[in-house]
Length: 317
Image 1 (cartoon, rainbow, N blue to C red):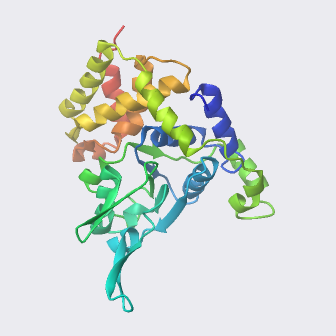
Image 2 (image 1 turned 135 degrees about the vertical axis):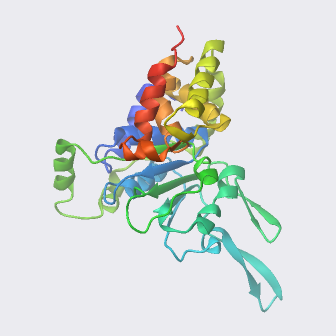
């Protein structure tokens, strides 16, 4: 793969579409996060293919995949690993946990308490795990996909702000359209596990080497000074909004710029335009801003506030 283009993104989307019907926008956002070297939150109600999305992405990108179901009794060692004493050698050996993979699916992350949620922090930020003073490196391709149900559902915990900020994007996975849902019913007529059934039809259309090349390609996308000013104005506006208790940090601005570069590449451009900024602002900001209680009482959500901010901030010409 020489470089990422709109046509090549469509090839990946179509390949994943053999298993995941619809959800093209979610697939595109997942690819952007993977190529950017970030991590994502997938939010949606149960049963709309969040886990299937992650598993299929790993397969078509030829990456190792492990899944952990997060539960109220899950311990940090269940994710990271632990030292086990070898009676014969009379020494401790480190047994690696499922975090040692390429794509790690933390399924229903908000069903486990904050202590275990926080166990992911170092791995996500530093791409390493520290156990009893010893550091263990994770692969460069390491990518966390954490699924969560809306927090209004019973038995869920809010992610701590520090951990939420470590996720590059928050992707909302919505119900399929009527036509897509009919297609889902048709392919599930004779079997339930569509991934297993379609496995022989799936192709590995991208490799970890391709991912490395794409990450290098990001550096070649050009930015004008006014684009930096535009991003800064958007981030500042989140801190000044009367609807928010907490605005976005500089990390959010960095994420917007990197993902805007990828969106430009996805559209066969080597330069950013304001529409790239607007497009990625929603998945970058929606989990980093906190609404005031009065805004929630008025049934205003994060995307509505982002709408207002983007409409108020002057767009560069």
